[in-house]
Length: 505
Image (tube, rainbow, N blue to C red; front, top):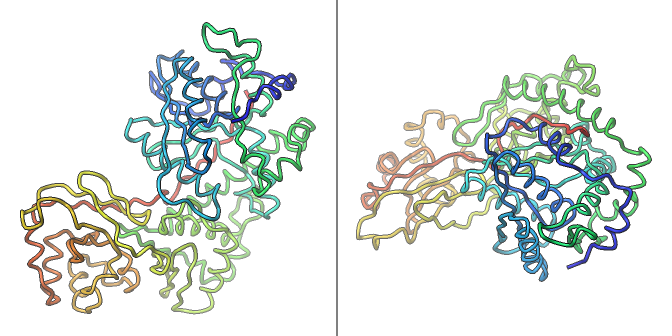
């Protein structure tokens, strides 16, 4: 845990964010409820501490309430003590606080990326439990500048170069970044002006924590931060809000074009397979055809299609981010050259069939270990499907749900019988045209390795399919009272356009 007082005393050039300025920033995200409820992700750093206190003021003025949430990733021994420190500090202001824990094994690579994904997942799950629609995070102007420069260094396209959006959507709530136009030094100055009620801390203001990972040169962002000497670069105008605005407008135009492409050319079926009916992937001229919008950085129809198909791959593969546009372009160029053709990208198969492309999950990229299933709750599988079990079981099963699991359909012996797949198609007609590999990645509910239900086939229907294939069905009679609900629910939607630029109030 690091005391922040030396930096506080050195931050006299910052301009505090007052209630009126913060209200103007929040107005970008209106409307809110009459008595708004907000969740704020707070690590204890200067940005999240300032955001939490400002959000608490904003809510109090509107008869609302804030819940501060700290995620302990379990990556540093000091994290638990830091979360407790945050809780004690916020309690002085009457702000409710909750700690969430990232359980399970931790990754050996891409730690920051995986930790961020876990953090957002935990926050999103809590938000839906509590019925909270708005989650605030403390990314500020310096973070935005670093993000854009990092993407410049990696030759990102115009979508990536716009940086972080002021608003994005998680599965159950929206993530808001009201401080994107505010330099970090202003947040330091803001905390200097805060002190708990009935406290004499006003001379030093509200303290915060410094995460030691912010000094770890193993991370690209930390190295860049040191190289930039961010305050000097921002104050000298190396990257300005005007620049951010221009990049944002370019991205907004591209998003409009991508949205049109998805609406006109992509169909996403309930089994998680997408069909792309776009004649341009067979037309070399689409590389040269422009969208007709001069402000879209000269992008061709083919570029827009690559962006759109990148979003399809993200959705179908259950990923958090789309693959790079250049990677999608390369695959589409290969698909042009032969028909039929199969290529893999981002955990998916792109399968050309005459005048369209099918996109489905790649079996080789899935975890095939059966996943235990619990009754009365949503069981997520492969970041793509949700299963909920409700109802009773017969005594022959032990009276509980022990032994239930989810696995890929391709792991079940009956699937490898042609008669079984033919019978499946009789109940779900569009499966008749599905490649075998696309059916193999459907989820199946198992009891002691015996299939009970496939996404799209409830227990009764599966019984008929098994019978038609000459497979035993006696075990299914034990579970006819169970209601099985499957839903294709990827980690991210097919489209979440709406890049939001937050201007300085």
